Amino acid sequence: MSRNGMGFWQETWQTAGAVARAMGITLKNLFRKPVTVHYPDVVRPYPDRLRGLLALTYDPETGEENCIGCRLCEYVCPPQVIQVEMLKAEKRNYAKTFTLELYACEFCELCVQVCPTDAIIMLKTFDLATSDRRELLLDKDRLHALGKEFQPSWATGTRLRDMQAPPKAAKGEAKE
Image (cartoon, rainbow, N blue to C red; front, top):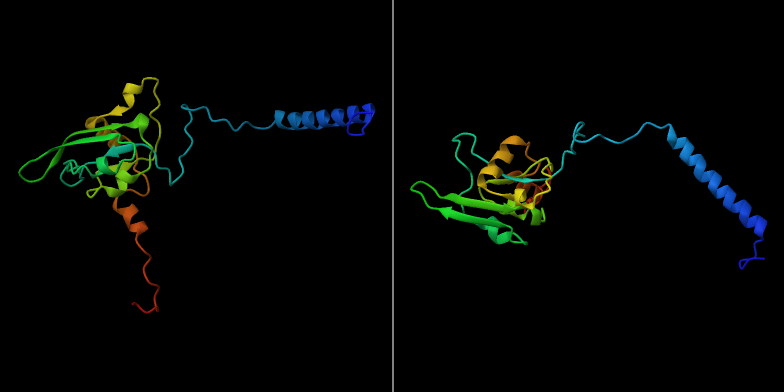
């Protein structure tokens, strides 16, 4: 007798039953349609609320960049991966340089939330894989190109701040 009181034949029968059940599951799934997507040939649609890469934007009316070089994103960034250098001009300030070390970014979205001009946004993509870390050191031109190439996320800038505001009072309720 074994330690737990079961005999040799009982243990053997139990093991054979477990193997038979496992093989049954394997045979059942052997002829099932695969769920694998052959990426990048076939791209799965992204969820509506995906917040992926960061990018810089332009004003659609004037064509000027939205970033005024205020450096709030640089100050609020926990891993300190954003560096901004301001260029003062007559009408408004600009970002002379804007660099983002994407390989160390936490994607916390604090830079998006704090930006007063909605200059930095999150995109509805994450496709920037590379084997060279230096390609993930993004400058101002590359961040603008990403902003033009990919669709922005659902909640960026002012829309994100509006969502975080307290809800409006329902109709019929007294306002304080």
